[in-house]
Length: 420
Ligand SMILES: *Cc1c(COP(=O)(O)O)cnc(C)c1O
Image (cartoon, rainbow, N blue to C red; front, side, top):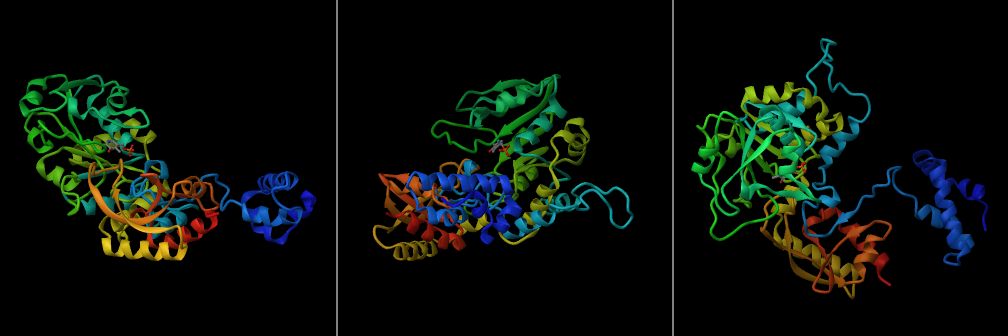
């Protein structure tokens, strides 16, 4: 068995010692020695094994290929950032002028560039503000406008976002009271109008972004709730700033504001395709109130988010948008190529992708992918470069709509390594 110090002295480990630290690399050496003792690898192969199992960074989070066909997969970090946003994020990681005016030397407006880019993207918004995520944007609005008062909300819009988080609980945690109107399937403007009173802080419209109700239903658009004398806040969820031609039922900030919503809240890492963030857009006086509220300080975003958000807004098309609009023919050609390079038992197939919990529920996106034996799914997750596939009809399916084209190479390598 090679001694630990001997393995650690291998020149190939030098960069890893610098990025991961000696203690972490030592753990990996000990694990490889244990595998050699168990007879799983040869003692001479310990150094190679260590080299092959070095994680790319000191963080335990691993980059994975999302081949699930769910474009916005919350468990996989939702929207992948564009190359422009990744560059901006890395360059902001050191010291930056996030809150300093380099010309005067005085204090500058924090994240001015990102806020200007957001305002420019939605000219109908009199004011804009950014929080830590969509939930934080809602909390800030509810706290500033309705603490100790009532939020009027339709019963059919009392949604659970995921992992047990329910918007009603979130709203009540601010000290606002919920005044429910309508029934599960139907609500009318008169229901809202009857509920408005001296205690009303705001009316909240929530877009059901992860389910659809069909049949005998009716809801009231935010634009029809103006004129009741209270702010109308519209939580659109997905972060579309303007209408998207392929997602006609998905609400967007510009349309909501033009129709009369006082405030729109949304997420940055869903269909906008940026970093995790909460967007608040709307009437200048309301946004100013929210921005000056003491809670705003606790919900503010860091420089990395501001940098990535600005690059997302100003930069070229983001990956999520490309995945959404990619041509089926191009996906089929990629599937045929990937299947051919893997060889048997891989088979190119047509399949159906979806936007994901982040928006456009029920929308089916025609897609293409590669089908493999079902046991590959676990092996691909456990590989050196993990791939998360979809298990469907007893097969492991790699759906290419959620895979950026430049990652096809990684798919081929990962499958080849996982095949017996
Ligand atoms: C996703 C979503 C939220 C929560 O946003 P986060 O950015 O995940 O905090 C709130 N409301 C709606 C309608 C959503 O779709």
